[in-house]
Length: 187
Image 1 (cartoon, rainbow, N blue to C red):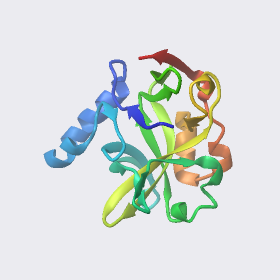
Image 2: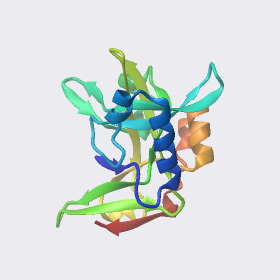
Image 3: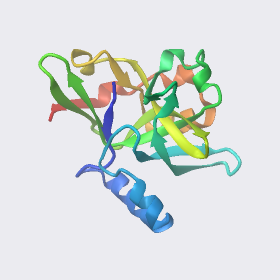
């Protein structure tokens, strides 16, 4: 589930502006690491975080995936994150996206899920390990229309829910997703 997502597309004016702001702020080598279009696991991407010391939101560049037992964990079931030791020292974050991809099994076909109101805010968890900031995307049982394609989907938040998730890390409140606002198109 959610093995790829799209950061910027043709209609993502907010995300295009954010990318341009990051170009101005970051050293060129750091900016060049960011995957700005279709984002694959283990690439670097823009992630929204809350800095409690500064009491403000910001954008961090993070690596997609947690190395766990020789494998790369890119998603986490939201229903069980409180029980798993892997996520005990993680902080909430929000992955900014214009859409995400899912594949049907039979026949194998790629679908692109977007939202009428861009951008999408995908709930995530982040941590720093060996000096590298990393994130995973939280998932939940699929709803309409995705349930016909895959049994899981990312937890999608409204802008207000995203802010609250990053500040409060309230799993129960976070799981009220705005999935009904999404539309599905075949790619």
